[in-house]
Image (cartoon, rainbow, N blue to C red; front, side):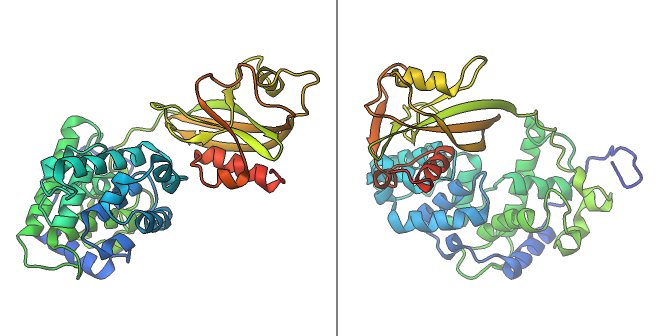
Length: 383
């Protein structure tokens, strides 16, 4: 809607010209944040940062990236690392397939490219876990190649500048956005050098300026248009309707899910199990868990895990609320001290199960929710 309340009918063409590119470069030269991955042109370090930044805020990523680079400073270090170490370094970031794909891609670089990160966009794109956006970010930032990028921040900036109608996830609209992003980075490549010292050049600075502008100024709600370097060419601002763009449909409501988790303690040790390959949390450790359905109770779950009489006392430990994809999960953890090793059918057979101490747990990678359960157990005197 416009300020007058009438529906928008206009689909702008955008302003992907040298003036816009130049204004973005000059703004980024002045306003770029000091971020640790901007101090290097190492494609490996830039790649790690880009993967970590997917669906994760910058302030969260910084300490993770610094720990990762301290532990695995070279691509070959990542390729040779134990998968458990990789997951432990990633613990808490979520979407653990990102970490597994990082290692798989590093091993492929070692075997297929002699350990040297490829410079070709097509070869970078062919690596596991790397899509069109990430390949473009690596090639433009590390190698100053005039290839476009398109993430949520960039989509928002380009959609508003051109008042681009339609859902950006629809094929036609999405390709139009890619085309506009390509026009901008190509325009920047043709301009005299005007970039932040230490960066590869105009292509690097242009693509980062789009991401930076979307993160700091052209925000989803309350964009600060008077601070925008391209506001003079922004059609959405002219229409008084910046927040209308991009036209992203409202997400479907998340699906509620309730899970019960047992923290079974025996002689200062607690029972944990490693998740099998192929699942959401493959390779991570967690406590025995089961979805709560009609008629199920923690006591019944405990009895199936540990069929003894009398049943051990069961006490609430902690409730953790979190999300995985479209699910909104409430995890209720219960604690019980048991006298003998686990038996019964409560935990799927064939999984790796161990009784471990708090010290041993510190070296295992747990899913975020179960890491909070572990912390609650230790905080209440566990072990």
